[in-house]
Image (cartoon, rainbow, N blue to C red; front, side, top):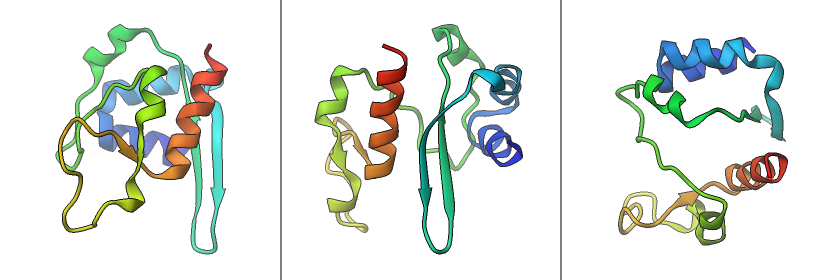
Length: 111
């Protein structure tokens, strides 16, 4: 739990971290990826939209992209893009495959 809260605080700010911490019993594990050198857990939490006002993006954040369930079918695999060239335009939503799977799982839980 400590690693999750540290990451949330770093990327989304202290107020968001406190909100997540107060709702920690409602967290749903949607992905668990284990590789030789690392282990990654991805969680989902249903929040009312006003929580967005609490988000304070860190300087290293790439920003927020709101994604609807309908958008998921158009998400592209981030691994196919050139690492140096990046994504062609801001209308393309690209994610790592495990992140996309976690997003699909989260939408299935909260339908």
